[in-house]
Length: 181
Length: 181
Image: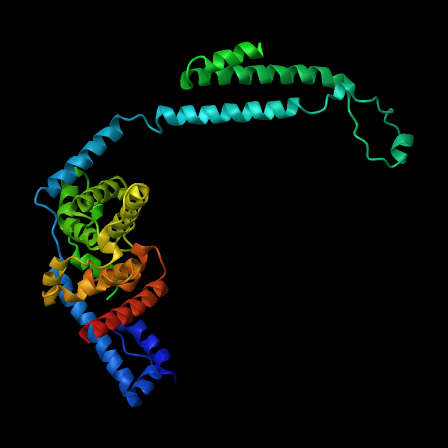
């Protein structure tokens, strides 16, 4: 068996301090370099453990008091804080939600005006029998639906102006509002 | 011996009995040196190591109810400390360099005098390894963590830890051989 495979296997068992597997044992019995390798690896580990003590640094004497002060300050702050997030978190969430609503409404608004769509033939068996895959619209519902959509867009714009007025520099949104009107 | 049994034997005070800041102080006293020393070994300056040790304990205190005693409390603290240090480096990466110790050996002539100190030679040579290999080596031999505990701290598999240890020991042995020639 190749020595490098055995050495790889040996390494895996060094930290466990268990006996080597039988296939490693049988190789070690007749391979002097691998026995020396195992010995050197064990010695290296032992030296690393022993010399680690000289590497130790201790925290300053005042450190415990400093940590406890920080912990108690944090605890005090967390009890004073309202549950949940700060006002900036809610502001950013509400702005993002308003933007999504406005974008959705504008997208729907830009859809082709169905009121001007050509009148389709009445739905009957003969027409269906033609096998066409045409879009069926109900003309009576389109006008009220469009008015509702306009209301939603207006509401969303008003909400967005109200939020943006408090965040962006004064004048930008007022100008935009004037243009819009 | 199982890691959990060992940790209970080594750590008389368990987080389960911590009810307030004062009793948390006992845990701070018990672990502050290990965490501080670990951060110093990872190449942090004294002020940075103090700050991150403090942050580690503050985070641990706030998350005490989420601590699961599958592994020891110190393993959990090492995990928090390592992540906090990583975030610290990531946040200041844009403006500052990493600590020089992580980058490699100094060419400062005064370092040559320090090299005479044989008791620290091994770990100083180990600093020439890649930081991730040095970290595994320190957790294993410096802190005496088991393979499973080291894997937990690094958020890696035990196999990764074994392979890294194998590479770290071999590379360190090569460095030592080269220097002794």
